[in-house]
Image (cartoon, rainbow, N blue to C red; front, top):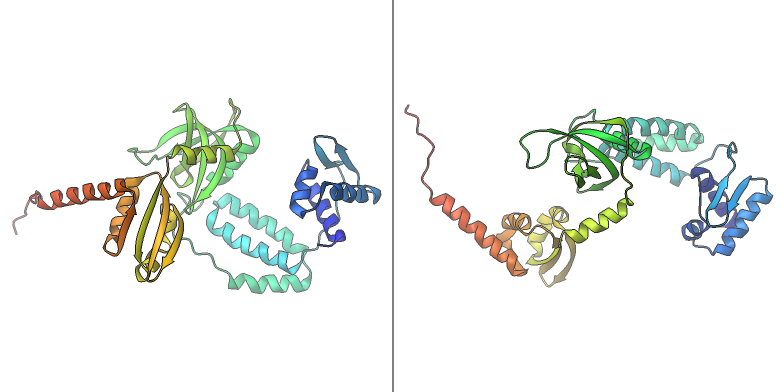
Length: 324
């Protein structure tokens, strides 16, 4: 990136955030702090009202706005790709808001870019087999984001995996994350008086209350890192023929897949899992074509499941026979 493009990009970033640190600019553009200071000085000399505070960062005086930005063809293409993803992986409210923002983006495109975008829209498709939200008009994601930004408690009607029915809960969301085609929020739960992980597709209803947060929460990344550590992950290694491995290419990512090595006509896969029995139940579907390398506890768990299946098969049929 040449210096002119970099300085323009720095100005856009300054407008996009309240405070921007020099170190963040240096990391984004792979330049030294001295170069950052020089570029900021150039913007100030050009008349941009930049406010700098030692130990805090840079900001632009309220009221200053950059004239409309012209997007490149490459940037316009990424917007369309993002729009397709938003249609499938976010809730109804977020989709609507993003679509409204996209109309504004398309409005500033040049004629050639508009034609390219309109043509490209018909050639991108995102297929999602899971429904990340309970209803088509769900606004759970938008409600959670509003709660986090305004620091207000959320009331949810939630169906836990082991519960008989939905239960109302009051929560303070820390943040949201996307994993295995589902959205999750880590939140302080007033019912449990502890932090819990909630899946958005199990939220039948969500609404922001007028009650402010009563707790100060650590950043989401700290909770995510801690949750992985608390899972006591176990290493699992299995081997199978390459001809069989192709049939688990997509499934393996749901069970903690880490890496694989190919040796001749066999593939050795490594997984990290915190739920041995859960992994064992999946493994039994591919067991005729696979071998467990480690751990022994996985082998023992599968033996136990096989014994249970055998015992159930030996039980007499208790279903009453209906005379015809």
